Image (cartoon, rainbow, N blue to C red):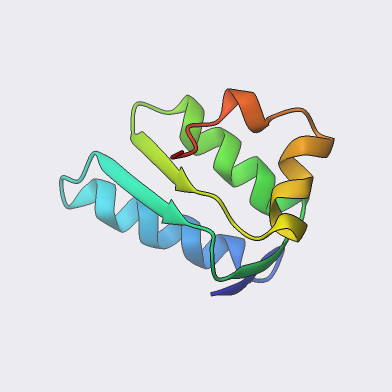
Amino acid sequence: MGELDLATTPRLAEAIDELRDSGFDHVVLDLRGVTFVDSTGLRLILSLAASPLTLELIPGPPAVQRIFETTRTLERLPFRT
């Protein structure tokens, strides 16, 4: 996947909207292949977690997980253990 940032977040949001429109109500977002998440990526993930959609997150590498730790959102998000 690469980066979840200002350039790529809109494409992910569009793909998730298409899934919702097709009737999906459960999304698993695998962050293992992500190398960087900026504030727009974090905002998308937080909005998905607050939506009626069931969201599961697969933790990414330490550099990616750091944004969740730094912003104190790690405990508020549905990470798989």
